[in-house]
Image 1 (cartoon, rainbow, N blue to C red):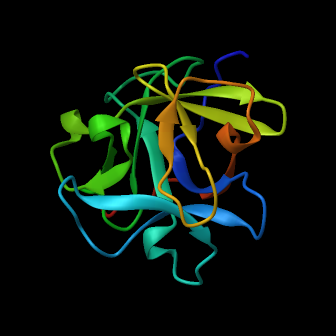
Image 2 (image 1 turned 60 degrees about the horizontal axis):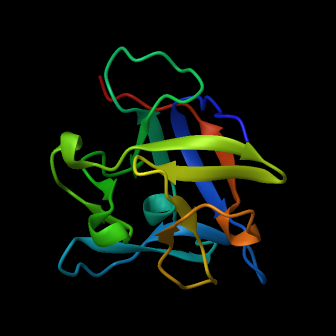
Length: 153
């Protein structure tokens, strides 16, 4: 499918999995590469479930195929990293964050890493994995836009 420009802002990232609604969620306990990211049921507290999707480079145009970075909305230093093609959130320098592009697919968007691998949610509670893109339901995501990036200036 075609690359999709995404408006920088705060998002809830819904996984398409069988069962109750699932959101991309940072877990509470850190391990070797940071805090694992999982798909989990909606939580009334947005702290671990709202993400900022932003241009990867300052001044970059929002256009189809442009790379984006994703970080926790309420912890701006905690970005998504993908060591060994597993998805974590970690407070490392921004240049170490993973870069993603988005493609329009039937029913939502496909989130692709800078290696061209698709983010896939196997089931609720699972850590998403990066896989070779296929026309799979579990590789489709919905971006819910609660609002723009809030600045603290």
